Amino acid sequence: MVKKVDAEISKNGELKSFVVVLTDDADKTADTLKTMAKDCRLKNVPLTLVESPSGPPAYNIAKDADVTVMMWKGTGVKVNHAFGKGKFTDKEVSAIVSDIPKILGD
Image 1 (cartoon, helix red, strand yellow):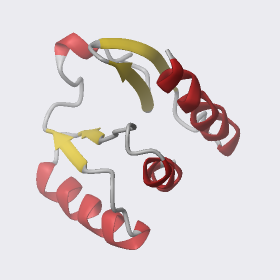
Image 2 (cartoon, helix red, strand yellow; image 1 turned 135 degrees about the vertical axis):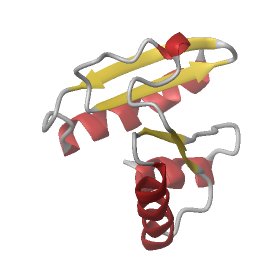
Image 3 (spheres, rainbow, N blue to C red; image 1 turned 120 degrees about the vertical axis):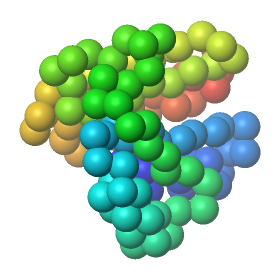
């Protein structure tokens, strides 16, 4: 998904994105993110981490979510999808990426 979003940003500079991985092992996660950024040749999407498996309280991350995708416009969250372990598939990625123009159009 990150590669697809990175490509969308290349097409439309109005779009911004970042990835936040919630972790309890910052060192291991940082190494993984460095490898991922290099392997995916990311140019527009910074990969970050928060050393807290529950995430920032204001984000209201679902406790049983393995992957959460949020999209903002201005200061308002427009999209918030939570996926349980093994439920984040290519079908969901395509649906989320197809929502990008809708977010930009709001």
